[in-house]
Image (cartoon, rainbow over all chains, first blue to last red):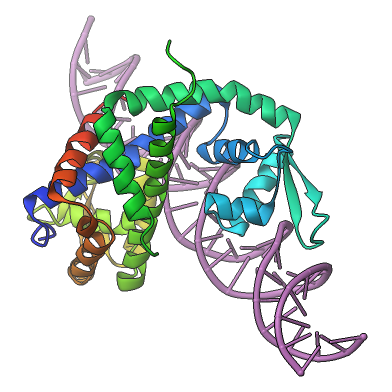
Length: 149
Length: 149
DNA sequence: CTATGGTCGTTGACATGTCATCGAATAGCT
DNA sequence: AGCTATTCGATGACATGTCAACGACCATAG
């Protein structure tokens, strides 16, 4: 009954794509945990923080950049702070806010993790996609992700 | 080994695709919850159960078909049973196992949910993808998801 | 038969995400 | 300035997923 509404092509493509949506992040996340002891969320926080020259971001801006809720980032950063990967400073511009800072330890973990992670993305994904496919996938991803929520 | 880092093309495509991996399931999941009070996981259980003529599956087989752990399905099916969407029967073939059965209520909820869900998949995804893109996406998804874990 | 090892679903501890709410601080309007 | 509405990050309740263990049951070699 559930396939009545989609054509056979749509149904099969949607099924295959859903499988990918589940499997790919799971595999890359497992690689990351095994190689570096980081979750995908940890890695995203660390690598985004490292983009700033002073390795500091206001929590709210970092959350917006990553498209996370402030609540999620507050919870997650508290856990990462306990592990010594980041720490928190008062925001001199806004006494409500705080700055998340990448610690030297956190930066070291990121530097150690990055090459393994890149290998993982290559071997699990990029190696199996042609340049044309990759270009198309990028256009398609941007087009759909940019739709209004 | 080749370059440790990604080329600009690879980097941008991977970023865009990662955004899609997050945003698309989130949007379709929110539609489903709003329209039908179901999570994506609920919907998957209900629709997979409905594929069997007698609406019954051994838990283990259902978990394998959906690529879930038995633990996850055990937890989730317990919650769905409380809500009256499914129930559990002893497996006559194997006294260790149990059969998950789609209740009439669960089937009714699924019937109500399906058209909205299909609309959601169309408006969030399929409408914005050409037939060529969809065919390519299917090949690519299958190729990558079929890689060994 | 019976011993032994594997598989079944369940369970509890834990990690992580959402949501509503809070007090504190800011921004905007007059 | 003073009042009010908004935004900040934190927090607790809750939902959901992972993992390792468990007792119960099954299958098979001897």
